[in-house]
Image (cartoon, rainbow, N blue to C red; front, side, top):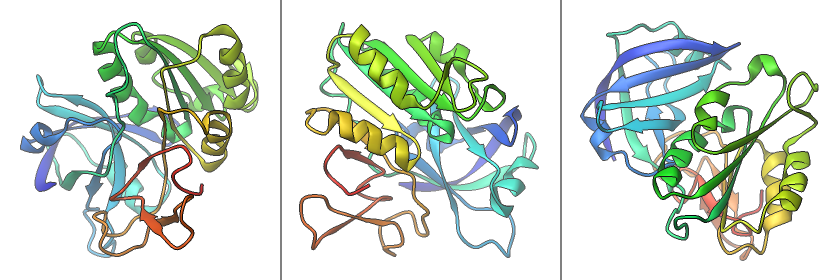
Length: 259
């Protein structure tokens, strides 16, 4: 983990309240693992806590990284007003990312995400594509209006989308897509998921015994380095122990923690 003032290359609004922010700096050289996150200081003196935002793309050739975030409070609202050339105080990369070691060329991989949990799955997909895996994306959104990156994911594999209101794709939650994928595809070599608690519980229920199923948890964080214990979750195998989402996570194997 390192800290740097990174420079904004570009920022654009890609869906209502959702922004894509591209940063450049030497810190990009430290970024390799999908599922890790950056801890970003809000450039306002009255907002002390950094904001954890997952890496959506790492581009070593261009020396850039991309994050995608949703405006949900004063901190992210402040980010959304920034422009190219301005700088952000960034720590990272932090956390335990996705394990790709079990995947080989030709393997079927399920990648499942919902809402603002979708962004880190793009870099994951890019790296799995490099391994020549056969990727099946199942992405859920509240509505067509707030969906994003469909075309980018289609460059990597097969994409299935569901919306809560039925305005696009399959009507319903991602669980409907998972049930259909279980019929249409062979047992996946690996399963990766990121999203809200309900989605993660559905994935864990279906793939609890799978040897290579991984969940990326969302959690409010303070220090981002495991020192303050503000983002703990309980171990599923030992009720006397807790795990820190920022340090030991945000990615855990199914059955490792209580969601």
